[in-house]
Length: 396
Image (cartoon, rainbow, N blue to C red; front, side, top):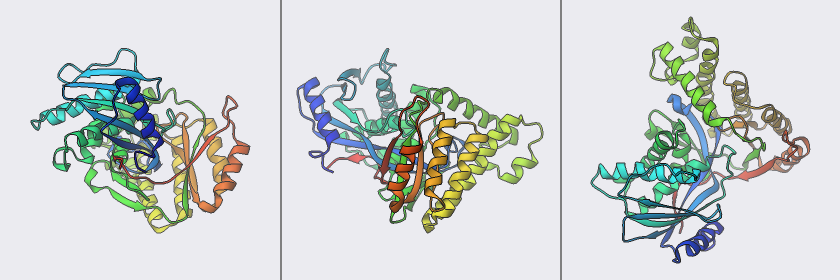
């Protein structure tokens, strides 16, 4: 879609005109994502199978001749931020969204300075439609879109700022600046997604990622449980620490290096809770590789079996689901039957489920979910039908 017809681009343009009185020079975008399978495996150097979705962050960009960055958030009543690109980039005292921008800018500045380059000044207006608090990576979409701004401003090719670089710098911003110890998956699929495909990512060897075509006539359904993910950051960090403890027990760099046989044979002395956390990661890696094969072959029955096993593992071993999420998966899977699957997706403790199913079943599954599910507060679910989208880039 061209920028002239894109409603997010128009929203950005309106905000830029109101805040800065000028039109933009160009627009960039970066999508959110849904992970089909492979949960919490990314920071264990394992495998994930996400696809970019057609919900995204758009940024209108206007070049400045000086060393200032001015930003307006179109979706937040026109809140603004201003950054001196030659000064210290610290946390914003009150605006959480600003820290995602500031952190990414700081990591970009360090990356380019090491190559003898400087960030150009700019005015930015940001708008997005990735649902927030739903586990669909609105933060990664924002970070990667911010990185894409300077890839275009500087005319930088892959040798100086590749899509993989964008993902790594965005992850670094979230880890080191925002303070969430996420893995690389969210940023990598936002930067490198391919329309019509999921992406099998080897999180240890990022260049080994492989596009896996989505079968024709297959829909990806995302259902928001309306359960707010209030614990996700602290519990996410705790799960990561537990995985690191397990890797230390097995004397490996990461749990990716442990198979199911060794997991059991060398478990003596490992805390039972930590063992269950490790068991989820080890088995989830195996499921993810098998799911990529099933998707490639168009075998929705096998894919559904793997997604069901993934959800049970997240519920019982990793303990990141929620009773309402479990119920939502049960309803969806019951309506889909054997020709597809459903599971929780994202960091956990609420948010969304993802279902992969034939197009012909979408209406019936939607109706079953709408009739059978309410959140603990009595709210109806939000349901989106998505398509695998391209990663970040410039709007035409």
